[in-house]
Length: 73
Image (cartoon, rainbow, N blue to C red; front, side, top):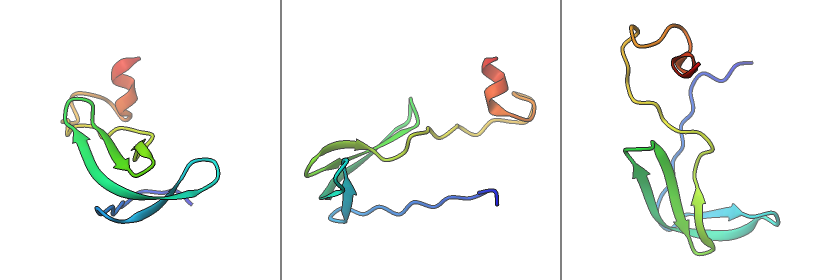
């Protein structure tokens, strides 16, 4: 099965599990950085990356062929 869509719902005050031992932490701040496309969350256990990938800006199909990574090859 191929994943084609992902939806991530995070809210301030939500409890998540972090670290090697799955310790509970509460979300205190959610930040999105336009320049890098990175989403980070601040928790009671410290800052965390919400995703291990970045969001791409919308590009026309003329900017790259099939794969957006081809632009950098």
